[in-house]
Image 1 (cartoon, rainbow, N blue to C red):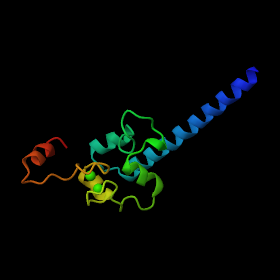
Image 2: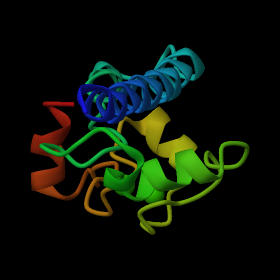
Image 3: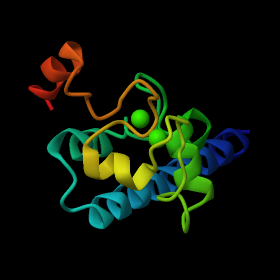
Image 4: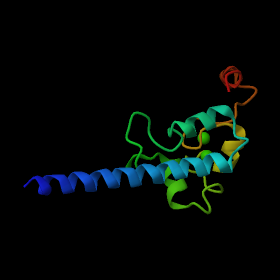
Amino acid sequence: MRRLILLPCVALTLLSVTDASATSGRKNAWLAAYPDACATLRSAASACTLCHFPNGSPDVDNVNSYGADYTTNWANYGAMDSDNDTVSNAQEILDCTDPSDPESLVPNETDSWGAVKSLYR
Ligand SMILES: [Ca+2]
Ligand SMILES: [Ca+2]
């Protein structure tokens, strides 16, 4: 009886370790691919919130639109526009804007709110 209980626990532990390793691998791959990304995005990537919804589990079922494209279209996700704001993911990384948030764009200099936000990027 004890063995019957122990085996599923060991299997769940192994699955958890495997999933965490895969997630860490993707995060490290992103950080290696964008060594010059701004500190804000590198910090978000390190905290997993660049691809995953905050306050959720860091597994594949809890990814935002950028995380979904990053996961499923590895070879082409940079050219994609995950948040449909007309700016490619690769350009958003260069611009230090959030590739999963359509409200996160390069500030328009004539927009006073954009100018204020640019001070904190
Ligand atoms: Ca975009
Ligand atoms: Ca955006």
